[in-house]
Amino acid sequence: MVIRRTGYHVAMSIVSFLWVAPILWVIVISFRSFDDVAANGLGSLPHSFTFSTYKSAWEDADEFRALINSLLVTIPAVLLSLGLASIAAYGLARYNIPFRRTILLLMLMGNLLPPQILLIPISRFVELIGYYDTLIALIAVHVGFGLGFYTFVLHGFMRDLPREIQEAATIDGAGPGRIYSSVILPLTRPALAALGALSFTWIFNDLLWSITVIRSGEKMPVTPALLGLQGLFVSSWNVIAAGTVIAAVPTVAVFLRFQKHFVGGLAIGAVK
Image (cartoon, rainbow, N blue to C red):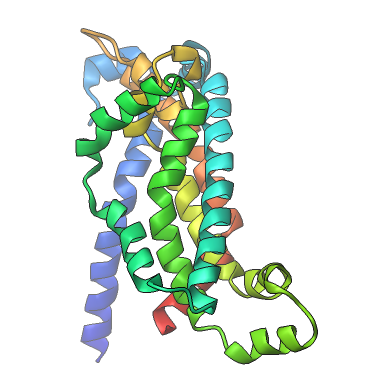
């Protein structure tokens, strides 16, 4: 038993180190000077320490503007996705809607399509309706592609809530809207928090759809903005690493803020 426990801890320590090592490597590179990286390589031990890389990333890539663009896309997309998904899941889970299973499967089928085959159709469609190169188009794309998955997850949570709670609220005179806002939503808060943290990370770190529907540099979110730091012949990898660390701060902050709800949502999902 002791040998098995020791082996388990050793194995998990190795796995944890392999998971954390790239992150630490990027952080170390972000504090190295360009001359140090050019002379000794990315994989060598640091021979310098500087904060100028963060200043360069903030100014050269205009990361403040890019971060604002990312938040202007991510926050509305998350709120709209979870709001619409919770309403759809509420109706499909708590009421006898005809063909509700078929509707749910059709909504989920959109997530089974590889996004690569939809790049050109989505780009052309957005251009035809006059919203190409706008943040509104990027928000709509994220809402459309996330709605089916979020509805599927929330449907599972809402379906397993006790019917007696809804019946008691109905006897007290509450209508469908009041039951949804005052009874169902509070009970699904762990699931909403878990999905909110995941969707925030997915949307904030998106690159594929950003470069598909956005053309102007001043409208680019933070992830594609980091591409502007790459030179044609020489790349300042220390500045790129610093920009990557800056771009990771919002998602790390969101995860730490909702960590308790995130773990609680996963635990409830596992039990159900």
